[in-house]
Image (cartoon, rainbow, N blue to C red; front, side):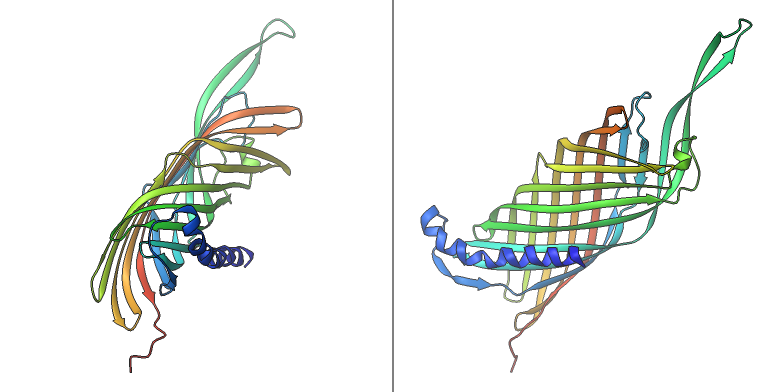
Length: 320
């Protein structure tokens, strides 16, 4: 409930700032003839999302570094998206829009593979002298996963028909791994749960084309940015001991395409369909400190999803 309230607060806070943009356009040279703010009909979205391919988090862990979330984890990202969007025309060819999205996730099963080494000390004929034999192996297990994902956007559009876009997105994403089906080694068999959390701050630019007919509208847009600031946090527990690793994206990229077709039915009311493809990729160094041991481990996050669904607006104008 707190997260949903935060989403709505940011959304409508952005809308409340729209009149300020109108007043400021003369000062800062925003193109377009000033007009009284014109609020577009409030749009609602409902869609089903699937990851393609599965979301992954890969840790390239040196064998000497005691990080528990190791190896290669892949899990399905899926669920129902609920969205809400409001556009405000603030000048003859300038429009701002705020939207918020919340995922109702579907529980899934993630898979993990991990390469680890084992050292065996063998006694020799000489008392107190041992020989060491190291072997490598790969273990696999499955987890039950649960995601928590929501984001809010603020976008400015410049130009009629074909528009230039600029904006900002705040996104919260986390996934919980629990109830492993099998153990990999002596350490991870005692790890019943781990959590991965990524809070990202995504500036973006892009283009949009909107074809408007008397009773229908087609909108296609593409946005993205070659760098995504983000905070990454991994928490693991082994035998009652909690270990936390933190990092930030070093190299990263964010891309998204969106298409929407709507058909007006009466007044401002309309129905339609939408499609969205979203991709986020980032590399990070996770820094871990526990007791007197510390380490830094390279990790990669890759999430690509496809969402399809319906959209509708409500009319408050009587057709009579």
